[in-house]
Amino acid sequence: MDTLISILPTSTAPADILRLGIKAANGPVSLACSFSLEDVAIIDIAQKAGLNLGVFALDTGRLNEETYEVAEILLERYRLKIDWYFPRHEEVQSLESAEGLFSFRESLDKRHECCAIRKVEPLSCALKGLSGWVTGIRREQSVTRSELKAIERDDLNGGILKINPLIDWSEEQLLAYTEEQRLPKNRLYSQGYRSIGCAPCTRSVQPGEDARAGRWWWENPEHKECGLHRKVM
Picture: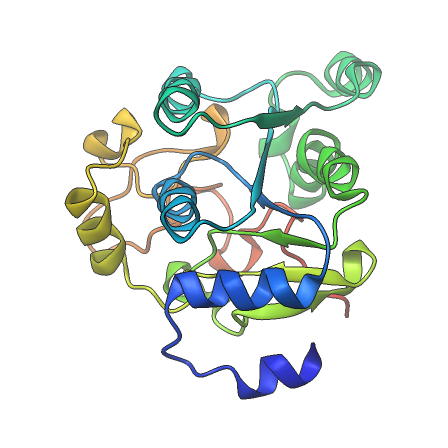
């Protein structure tokens, strides 16, 4: 697999990255779907290429209604089976009882605590038994993602493969594909959102801001990850 990473051309098409990654994983592979434009495009690409790709989603308990609407549309359009994973209710109850409903805005540590409970732990459950997982990460999105590769080893999750088929796509390419294929689109994008996560942690962005400027907007750009895409230091 490490040889595959080193020889993979930078211009490899998303369908080919998926195909190579699934083959290299040599076992079950699933897309971590947040119902973003990226993830919807990956589902469409995989379906058209006839690839065996599972789909799972993390319901943090604080998603926007518009996100659930996209999930329902995808179920009908592609006849998908989506595996949903949830945070442990006792951990959410303990956090909110002790810290309140918006503790994640008080400090970076408290935001990481919330993300760990609502996203990171459910992801670890979702990845059990998988040989690889697929994300909609693009390098262009933020400074925290500029060094990621199309296919890499995820040492934080047991060394399984992490496949990022849209890694080299620009936002223009993504929007063009979405329009050409008439893909479902979260209604929040039309309100100025360019990246959509939990409702209290996401807002629309201003012209000239990067795609993830609306995520945890009170933090510095280099901190804007939830823990799902960390690297082993």
